[in-house]
Length: 104
Figure 1: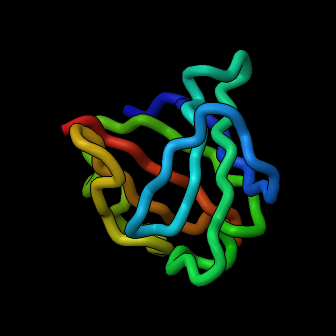
Figure 2: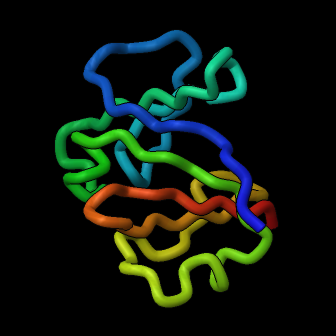
């Protein structure tokens, strides 16, 4: 089962409450703090994240089984753990980035 979780929007503006993800060279806001579940993403120069995530909004879904959700899909970013207790991966669906999230 998949449930809508948030929309991630790239930005170049600093936002209050940004969280820094060092490995990704990325600042993100907590979508739980947004009335509309918006996660703002601000990338540092040299971020290893895919270019499409730096320039295109993505939709994120919470899933029960990350591997099952990705089965047969075009992988953009293999599963990784951006923070404790959460595993995420990205696929491309008709050229649009989609994030799958699983609590672990």
